[in-house]
Image 1 (cartoon, rainbow, N blue to C red):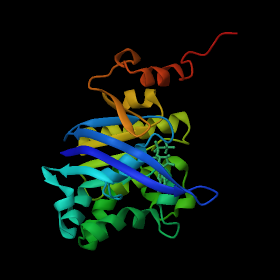
Image 2 (image 1 turned 90 degrees about the vertical axis):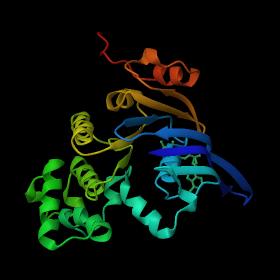
Image 3 (image 1 turned 45 degrees about the vertical axis):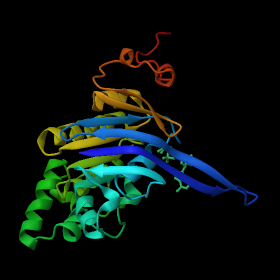
Image 4 (image 1 turned 180 degrees about the vertical axis):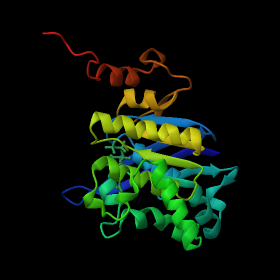
Length: 261
Ligand SMILES: Nc1ncnc2c1ncn2[C@@H]1O[C@H](COP(=O)(O)OP(=O)(O)OP(=O)(O)O)[C@@H](O)[C@H]1O
C-alpha cells in the first residue's frame, strides 16, 4: 500500500550564533507498509519517528527519495489526487488537547473532517458521528462538551473518532497514549486494536516504549538517528530483537515485576 524508497528529510536550523546546522531527521529509509497490518515504530526521542510519519502523511516534503502509494509515486500526483489520497491516510497527533479546536464541541470536532473531506447531509452526518462516538466509547452526553471539559483519555478518543470519521485506509498514531494513566492507556490501546479488527485497514503506532510496541503489533520497526536499524516481522518477545540498539532499548526498560524489599 505504501512504499518508501530511500526517503530522507534534512532540516536546516540556526544555532544561537545564527550559524546554520544540518539535522538529518530521516536518512535513506526504505520500507513497505501493507494493507490489513498493524505496525509499531519504536525509538528514543529525536530518532525521527514523527518526521517519518509526517512524510508518510505528505505533511512534509522529503529532501530526497520517493513515496509510493498504491503503486503511484506521490511526487507525480496532481494536487487534487493528493487531496483525495490524504483522506485515506490520517494521523492522531501526540498532543490531543492541542489537536482539538478549543471552541468546538466534541460533536463538531468529530464532524469537521466529514464536512471538509466527505460531506453528507446533516441527518447522515449525525448518524455517523453517533456511530463513531459509540465506537470509541464516548457517551452521547459528552458530545456537547468542549475539549477542556474532557479528561485526557476522552480527548484521545475524540481524536481517534475524528481520524476514523473519513474511513481512512491507514492511521498513524503518534505517541497516542503518552501522558495517560496505565488503565486509560490500556483502554486506548485495546480500542485501537478493536478498531483495527472492525474497520481499520492498517495502522502505524509510534511509541518510545517497546512493551507498548509489542502489545500493539508483531511487526516492529526500530528507528535510531533517522534510520530504521531493525525490522522484526513476527515479534513476540524481547528475544526476537537482535540489533545492538534494540538490545539497549530493552535493557533500559524498567523491571516488570515489583522488587520485594
Ligand atoms: N521542523 C523542524 N525543524 C528542524 N528540526 C526538526 C524539525 N522537526 C524535527 N526536527 C529534528 O529532527 C529530529 C527528529 O525529530 P522527530 O520529532 O522526528 O523525532 P521523534 O523520534 O519523533 O522524537 P519524539 O519521540 O521526542 O517525538 C530531531 O533532532 C528534531 O530536533
